[in-house]
Image (cartoon, rainbow, N blue to C red; front, top):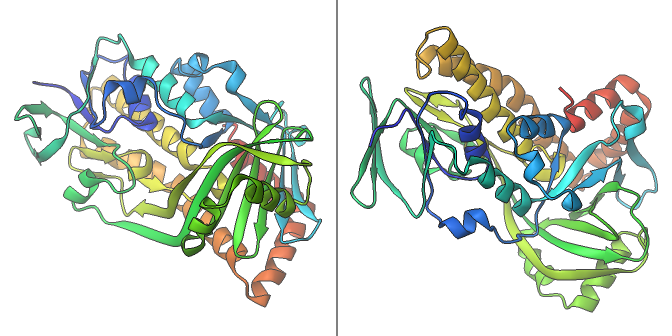
Length: 390
């Protein structure tokens, strides 16, 4: 079967990229190993995604935002960063911006479902589920993809959107820097006695971090980052002990807290590909950059990159240039690298600083919070990165 663009992976970024090309004459194919049910009705996985204003704008343009249940969207109006047991915090407030919120918190499964719905019944998008790529070949003539059922597909451009441990990226020989933090992220949902006032907290305790993110109603998403050798201890805690542990560590800011449902855990590592393209081949989403979740840039960055690549492809078409040419893909690589590299290394630097128990690191942490709070140009820069208005 012949297509123009083949996308390996049907995660939210891969499908958003397909959706962003739906207004072109390109024939798009998406290949996914999982089944239709897991895409159309994804299970709750404990993860909540903080979306910036730019992501909302892109998702609205792609008719994804209007498919998300408004009752599941929580508005983050304030954010506070706490260092150890110090009562002092780096404080961000939406009132210091022109927006009614710093960002939006939405369950991951709601986003996945909305993105999937957005590509249904679009004529130039074909989705193959329960399909595995056996191998692919790229040369001057085009792309050939061989599937596990023996079928072969052809295209002019191949897009890898198959996650941080991408087989497609590896097959193309594109190196990727991987930073294993040696930690595990544990997430769950908790209800609490007091209102959260739409305030998000990031608490850097020694040996672990605790994020408390405001959900709809009297509930919050709890995100614990802890050394992997101690993760099982937290996962095995009974409900009563876990509730007591969290509300104590959070110093009863929300009163009594109670877990709802189960805990979910995920290994924590970040990655950044050396480059995002090759001949007739490009990386998007976590295949290109997998971020540490502390700055909430993961999906936002992936969505932004996919959207920008689609714009570059459309510009090439309007100029009667080959959308899969080296010049087109080099432009995408250059622009996205300029965005991702400072964020990737800056985020990792912050994480290393706030996870260090060295005396110098503790001093720098305290100074950094006060400097960020009191030096407006720096604070404004941080807020612009958090909200991504443009």
